[in-house]
Image (cartoon, rainbow, N blue to C red):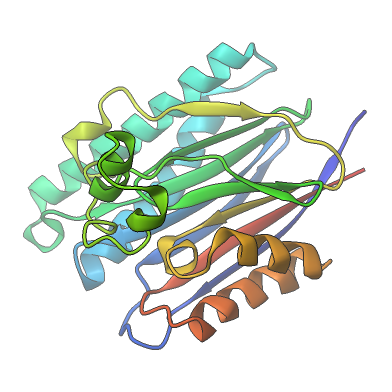
Length: 250
């Protein structure tokens, strides 16, 4: 059964930042749609440049590598290679230009192929969620030191939300730790499901249950994205806030 997408996006400066280092992009091609969110770091121009590069290079490389319907394994390899390419370009730019030295960015993306396969990938602590039948599921894993402590059994997931290392990343675009690229997950979808891509300006301050409730309460994806950003600000976010809401429709 063929499905379609309705997409909303929002990115706001917030109440405490002088510039917006986030970037949000929706790329629609004849055979695919790519939604991507990035959260830059490195300060002012550097962070903005890194996130913008990620949202430009990753979709471009995915499009170049996926020119026809391919096996899921091939799609996953193509996504990983696209992220690695973006990482290489960000590192190279930082090495050439002192103004961009040590810049980096998170990235989280949703790739929807016209044969109704959906793939999710992320590097850093920007997240992807799926809301289906009243339940919310986090689809990505944070690459933060706090999450590493959770995986080691040192702290609980609840403790990680307030841990002093929750915003300290060990992997992001602009770092050698990206290696061969991120895990790429094929996500089963059905009509009525919603996907959320967001920076930690949203997920870092709004608990998952409130994200779920907000996603389910607003039927229009664009209005939903805008309300989520406002919810983050109302909840005390001190960061830029960005998100994409994707709804699966028939």
